[in-house]
Length: 199
Image (cartoon, rainbow, N blue to C red; front, side, top):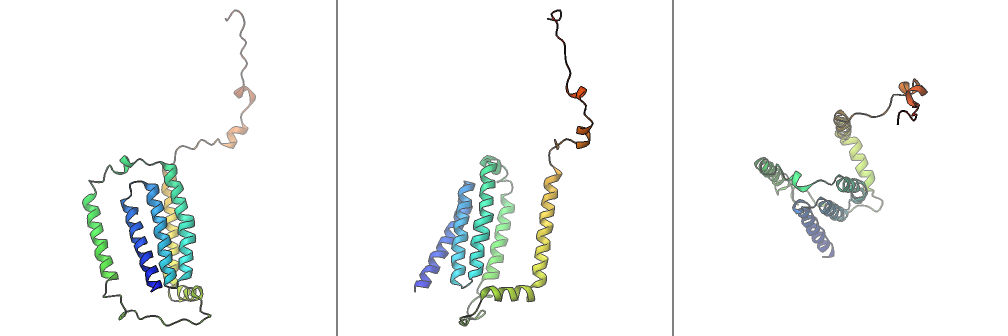
């Protein structure tokens, strides 16, 4: 009964904070609500006895990624009017994409693919069972090629982002060292004699 109450608490917290991420007009508050969503999801994973994934979610996403997002959003100072300029123009496309995502989620997470009939209740683990070891064995044996493919895709995305960011970079103001060596004092300093006749 206590475990079920904790599950409902974390579920309600995840759904409500996830909704506030979408509803909130302030981007900083939306990111803070997203942190609450990640923490509540980590609690749900802890109830499912996935301690490694739960701690990884807290350390990686809440501890690193979300802090980085928060600093970027606070430093950019994006105006809300600029973001909402093309909202009505792209509203039909957004609604179609939202409907497709909801249909895909219902089809994937519906009772057709999930439930006690499809996924049996796991047996109790022995005392020396390690989730990290089980995850590593599955990840590096059965799903080795998808794991490597995901790493290659992420690497290509990083390289593409760097190349796109450096393409529109402003003019570099750094000086060429060869030109600095060739400079003589006559080019840098010129003495002007101002006599009384010139005043």
